[in-house]
Amino acid sequence: MKNAHLRFGWLMYVKSTEKTTTSIRLHLDRFIGEMLPDPPRQAKAHLISVIGGDTQIAAISAAISIGDRFMVEGPRVPSTRVCLERNAQCFKGSIQLPGRKKPLRHLIGVSEEFASASMSRNCGRTLLAGSDRQFVWASIAQIYGVPGVPEWTGWFSDELKTHHAVIDALGIGCDPVIVKGTKQDFLDWLGWAVESEAIRFPLETGPIRWPALSLEDIFREVV
Image (tube, rainbow, N blue to C red; front, side):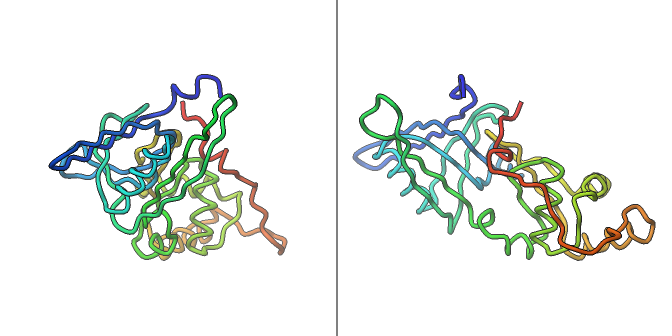
């Protein structure tokens, strides 16, 4: 955790009315988003994680609920206007720091798409918080209900590249990707691979044990 603040980004929110202007700037420790083709330097946000005081966090939560836009910036992400869009969810918590009387407030905002696996199955694209090959393959196998074993990780990664089916998303504190494809696409790939003997089913029957992967592994420092 040494110098962890140097890996943080910033979230800026400005709200103007006839009488007042509210300006808030918060530490942003995690962010996932994707650039929009038009207008430039605007993105759809899928996850934001910010830390601040009671009043600041309350204001950001209210802004998310009405679909207001923010500016975010950080390592590998230039200043970009973002919005979580409709039906976003908010989760709040507290962080007690030694030597501080009042705890910091923590807010996580999640887009409707990122919170719902069913939307991924229906729209032919899957947003994942990490790019690790094993995590990507395990996630696709679970979300779409396709047969798979950990030993097929390398094969699936190669298929994604061959079909140009994986693209990088915007990330602060993580390395997110978007996987393009439907359940039928993945089943077709599996069928061709089995026929060509690029992959083989296990000789023994029984449960498939996938290596454990924690949130700490997914949201590890990106260098």
